Length: 79
Image 1 (cartoon, rainbow, N blue to C red):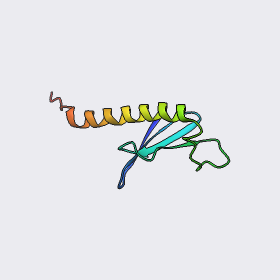
Image 2 (image 1 turned 45 degrees about the vertical axis):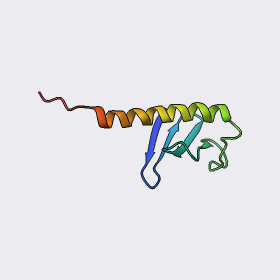
Image 3 (image 1 turned 135 degrees about the horizontal axis):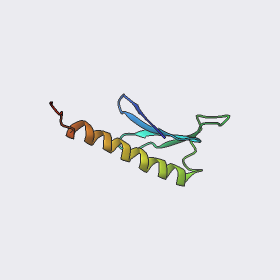
Image 4 (image 1 turned 120 degrees about the vertical axis):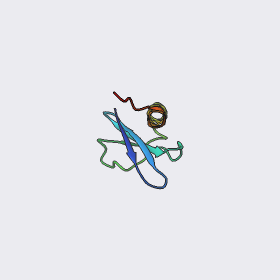
């Protein structure tokens, strides 16, 4: 997997695997699933592949939550 972050209002997060690219707002809204090797790669396939969309959404939200935690709870170690 590769995690993506697109800054903006609202920010978008995503996840790439070998077949699909999932993108959504950081609050989990507007989830879109794209097939990477499709002839029409901008067609949202979330309704056609609900299991894939759900799995990738859970992973994406987990990674995003972890990055937020690490950014605010990672203390600097002074040697």
